Length: 155
Image (cartoon, rainbow, N blue to C red):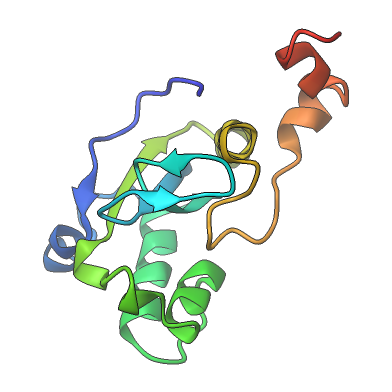
């Protein structure tokens, strides 16, 4: 997986208590994860990724996820809405969730980072995290459609 200068994992309960004050309201990418491993199509995701995302305003984006998982039928964040609607909290209680992020200079850079993290995850597990329903094609658009062949040493 590509190495980035991520923040440390922050327990979701801490973000609720801090009212997200520690999250910059600037561009960046983020990962919301369960507090445990998750079996995947291929292997086990030991970090328990549930959602990989990006935003031009991280604080607002994570606020939207928090609202959706704590206030029924709220629709600020699609992954948060799916988490609540489909009862993910039965398997991944909200207080056990954790989040980390990386600030970027621009929204375009945030999209690029999200795409690279998604691609690394997809290559490792042959599927996206459970709350992601759309793949970010930025790595292919930037680096060419033969990217997989090159990454796998076939091109």
